[in-house]
Length: 62
Image (cartoon, rainbow, N blue to C red; front, side):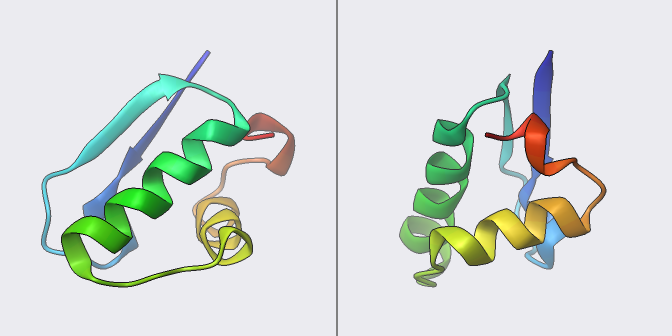
């Protein structure tokens, strides 16, 4: 099953959508986007918390 993450859901005016198989790499890709496009260097733990706060189970992204 895929995990669909929208940058807009995390407070940015951005149309970026990450839609791919659930894995730990998904967190890294979202983190890279935040850094490259928005200049914010979030820790992996912070991105993980942001995703789980949006209702995704921790097991679904590890």
